[in-house]
Image (cartoon, rainbow, N blue to C red; front, side):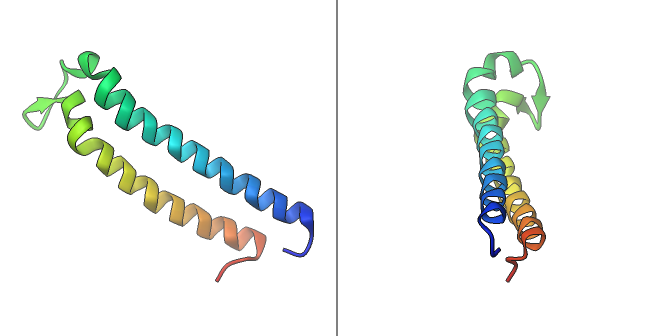
Length: 85
């Protein structure tokens, strides 16, 4: 990453991935678990309603999936910009 434009492109892509991940995490944990819970109460998952499931387990599973997605995507982005380990 010798030039400044490559560095700026790398960080712009990195910040974009972080923003998308945070929006997904907020939507799933706060949106589905709290705000949209009454709308999701009619859908049964594992003996309970979907809103409760998102509040208790779904948001944690989505968070873990986002961690693995971020690690995978950053490894790919590092390789594209020549800064891999």
